[in-house]
Image: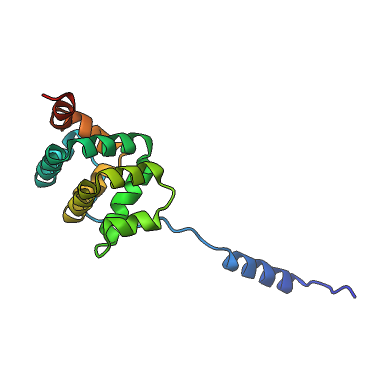
Length: 159
């Protein structure tokens, strides 16, 4: 038995269909993490920059691997930084368990567990600076090669 659809029924169905469709809301941007040129990142975040430099000096091999990882997997690196900030009670092992299949990161973490944990703590201590850096795909790699390369490059070459 066929039913006649009235104009009111059609409008009602159309209205319902439009309301039932999921909407995509962009993720909120942290108030403190603003878009800024990488050239002035260290000037805008002097304490974070100095402490990141100290981390690179203390963990040059891990730093080089983190920088290389960010250059090839910028989205994953940004996710790691964001996760670190938004999960303050979680440790590096929990991140690895919840992000299986991140082979490059897992290799870094296995070889440089302490350095990865220290980097996570740096992100949490300086959330605005770390987010600002990661707002640029490859931002960590840029910082590593433009601000701190001498720290890890000298260690690697044995100087």
